Length: 137
Length: 215
Image 1 (cartoon, chains in turn green, cyan):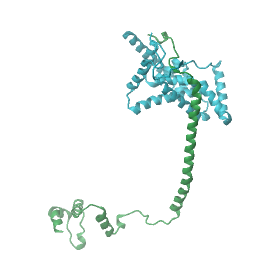
Image 2 (cartoon, rainbow over the protein chains, first blue to last red):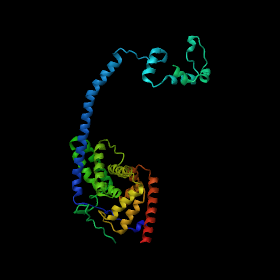
Image 3 (cartoon, one colour):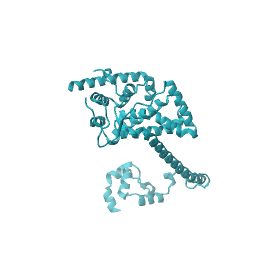
């Protein structure tokens, strides 16, 4: 079947009576709503700007003119042992055995060299039962 | 021949047939000159509302008819037609007149229709075929459809096409736009539009032949 054989009908759908007489007014009303919404958005935007600008100015003044303190980046070497200990005690859940295991696994010294005792980490790992050590401590 | 009764509960009682567009100017050149004049008046604050009202009155039926063919339902078509003209109002001041006013309006209407159908699928996670079935069911219910049985089959055949191809078919077959005008509406090359329309016609003819055999 060829499309050309069909009679071309352009009016295929019904519409409510008077629809096109009312449509321009409905569109104008919708445009009015849309414009009012835009005006409100602008007003709100302006209001926000009214407060945002002074706030931003104050922030800039504070940033550039208030003397800065303690702004150097933190470095582990800049911390005292007491600070590190305080952190470990207060802020972490580590217990003594975990600290010992960390040193053993990482192959680092336990710091006994300072006391004149040089104990290799491997030896500690093999020879010392951490639970016994904990009991002892 | 099946005559669909439009007196359903969901539709208003009083009807009029979708009439032909208002009397066309003698030529496209005249129409374009008139549109230019209206755009000029729109840009003047004092005559903006009047000019826009004239534009709406001039093109509302064509814009509505185009959208209605895409979305089938009157309420949806009404919403999208209003939205098309609201968008036209917002952007007409910046309209650069690189295309004709009516092709520009058609483009907004086409985008509104395609986005509406796309949103409908996404919002309800409805598969493509279900949206088509929903539109076909609306046609079958006869609510608002005045065409005869063969026209109903044609509309159902159109629903088997992808949305954009259906739009291309409608613009060519029903609106009788030239390929150049369609190119302005769809922002697609003339060659691609010719191919799309040709394939659409083949698919529709095959669908109609099959449905004739079945009946």
